[in-house]
Amino acid sequence: MTYGFESAAVCWKAILSDASGSRGLLSTIEKFARENNAPTKVVFGTSGWRGEIGTDYTFNNVRIVASAIIRMFKENDPSVVKAMGVSDFEDIKKRGVIVGHDNRFLGPDFAREVIGLLQQDGIKTWYAGEAATPEFSSGIEMLNAACSINLTPSHNPANYGGFKFNPSDGGPAGTEITARIEEIANRMMNESRALDTVEPEHVEKIDLTDLYMKYIAERKTLDIQKIREFIEREDCVICIDNVHGATRGRIERIIGKTHKIKYLRTEDDYLFGGVAPEPSDSNMKGLCDILTKGTASYKLGVILDPDGDRIRHADEGMIIPMNYFGAMALHFLHVHKGISGVAAKSVGTSNLVNAIAKKLNIPVRETRVGFKNFRPYMLRNARERAIVCFEESDGISGFNHTLEKDALFGILIAIEMMAVTGKNLSVYLKDIMDEFGHYYPDRSGIEVDRALAGEILVNKLSSIREKYKEGSTVSINGDQRTIKDVITVDGTKLVFDDGSWLMIRPSGTEPKVRFYIEARTEEGKKAVFATAEKMTREALGL
View (tube, one colour):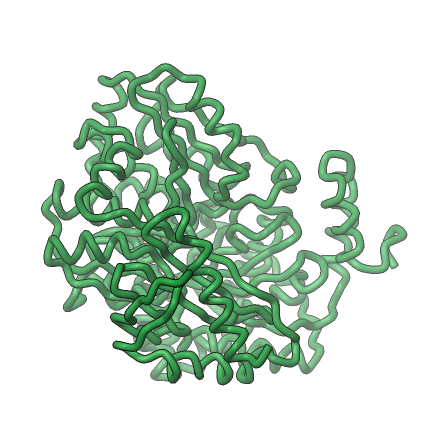
């Protein structure tokens, strides 16, 4: 028991119940993080390993995961070497590893542990300090580094820490890499090993923001000069909510100082003001209030998550989710900037982009959920290169840009849209929908008994694709809809003849079934949800 708390989890509960009055308890969390040597199960999900600081995410467990990565390096396994884009361990040692973190509690301390272990095995290291995820991605390419280790749990609440690994192409690590890290780390966990701290011999700092600026100048997808001129010339206000995250100060360096850009929540705050630090509609109230009260002709607001890989947009007219903004980015890059290629989207995203792509003769590639699945379309030598790639959970990147989702890119391209089209985002979106059709996406789901989780749930839900075939009909609120397409890359997605659709997939981490739907009217969403739930309950025998 530490200072009256039996565990870090209990202490965090007290902290998060009163974020303003319980900050002093963070010293207790640090004590748990340093002294707790209990093992955990390491799982790299769609975006790295995450755990509660002091409970799962402890100094010893971070040392174990870092040591597992080093062991993986030394094995020189051909499949891992190929996936990393290196020749062997000696190549990794010379090219080096970028290590950094977002602005979470104990970030610099955890990073120091990782750097010390890497240096002990003769691996060159750069310390990025507080940095955004897309900066790691571009920095790897600019330095020709072997990989990066970014200590962030992305948009998770304040009690979480995280561990992202990116190979030499800058994208999220594929399963060839993460499965091996998991295997080695969990074996070490089972041995209940307590590893000693290794102090770094030296810390070589690197300015990833400077490298990011050089990167976007070289890639030329974004026109920074046009963006600067627009802000200087036009009557505009741009509001950027950093939610106390690592994106703070980045746009100011890229664009320059101007009174026309207002920055919210840039202060240090390990507890994020007591809110979940994610780009949600509920988190955008302060930003929207500023836009509503302003009198400028052009208005743009954005909210970012702590590591800068998720973004949501707004103007005075509406909040614009990524389902819409990704489609707008495709239209803008192809029509206004002349970029050709394919549209890459995760299978749960709006079909507005499909409607645009069909009229403009652009192929569409739908992938499983997880940004790493866009890699085949984002590589510079790809046979089919993406004009844009995006997922409904607020992630986006574009042609010739980072293989990681990039909120900074999302800000800059939104400003360039206004500069080129002469329209606020909601007006541009309305014009697109008037031309290509109106679409209304949403998502929901139901909880199921824990006994159904995993392979059992997957197998039961697979009966949906067997029952509902292409060409068969489904009654939705009394209307007969013909199934035009059945997509099974991630769960089961049924696309109907009017362009509406539903997708049913099991959660990969919880005993839940998730529904992703899209109707052609706002009022029609309820009926599509009801149909998805009915199909699910039938499949599960509920």
